[in-house]
Amino acid sequence: MKINPSNPLKNAESGVLKHFWTRDSSILLGGFLLTVFLIIYIWWPLAEEYLKYVDWSGAWWRYMDWLLLGIFGFMSLTIIARANLKTDLLIVFVGVCGGLAIESWGTQTNLWHYYTAERPPLWIIPAWPIASLSIDRITRFLNWTINKAEQHLQFIIHPSSFIIFYWSVFASFLTLMLVFVAPTFDKSFTWLALILSILLILTPTDHRFAVLTFIAGSGLGYYLELWGTTRECWTYYTNQTPPLFAVFAHGMAAVAFWRAGLMVKMLWGRFGFSKADQIEVGQEA
Image (cartoon, rainbow, N blue to C red; front, side):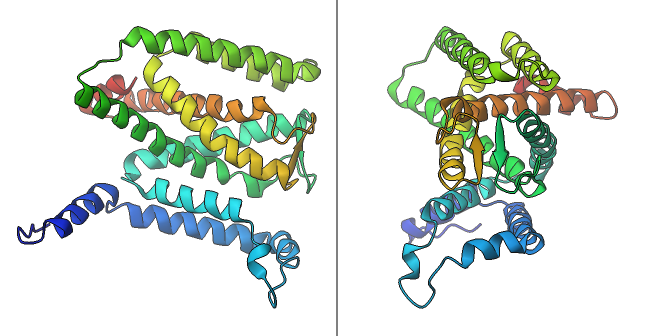
């Protein structure tokens, strides 16, 4: 990219765009929009049911779901930021598998149900990898912000601070989870979810990144749950809109997906990755 010394404002804009938009951003954005189109096309009756409530001849903007559009816009921007297919495809893969497992657990144990009565509905699964990509970007932005703040203020946050915060947050989450899923202790899916969560919590690899991932996942999860429960797209057995556990569960799921991605990289490294790739995985962990 050529720099024009006579126009510093244009140079600054070009620099920002260069760091935001990569050659893979177009591919990822196209895949995202294609996925949305296919969901609407395949499950058109669901979309039609919503659209029929809009008075297109009058004040149609009053009928628009601005929360959904805001979430859609935010996630569209975040997933294309510094896109890298080499790493993003793994995030998508883990998100699909993890999302299917979580939705199967929740709907099969009746912790929540969808208005379509599907257990689980396939149209909700793509939301998981899309959210995973968005959470990855948010987490890395938070990490970058902390690093910049430390450099600017010449103050280093001691690693022990994140360790203390880690155990406080995840111990609280586990307590909340035990209370919320208590009615389903007779289900094997629930015990598998509990065992997996406990194992993940007790074997941290990077306390700081785990905490930031949890915060990012919970933050995005709040708005996703707020939309879904207030629109009665899905309903929890507590009828809360949304329950606190559901919000933080998105943070826990984000940490689980991140850890699963690291594990896949390590296993894959034993079957053909170069030593450089394996070193990179070790550094991420």
